[in-house]
Length: 88
Image 1: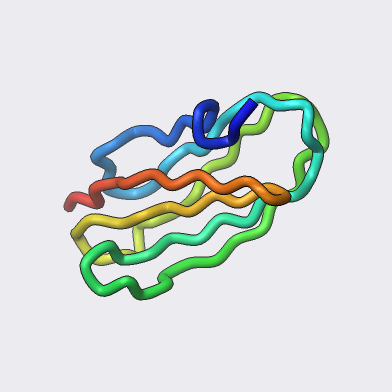
Image 2: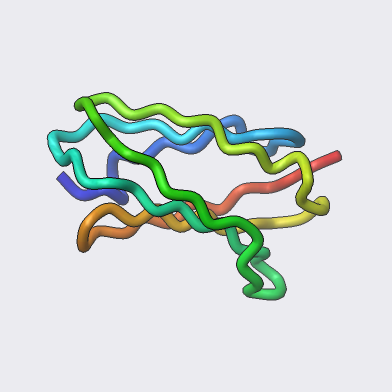
């Protein structure tokens, strides 16, 4: 199963937070990066441990400016990307 196919990021658009969720057998840690889409600038970098099949984590983006962001999720040698819109 490819990480790109199973990751869900919601709500989108959002103002304060996004939920990141998926299910997989891999228990490798997750590295999450949030980039400003227009500037390519790294805004947040987070690491999460995955201890069970199901994973769900809330990511606070309330401090980011309004705009479009790319969330990069990395687990082992797999990566997934999601575009989110940060509103007011």
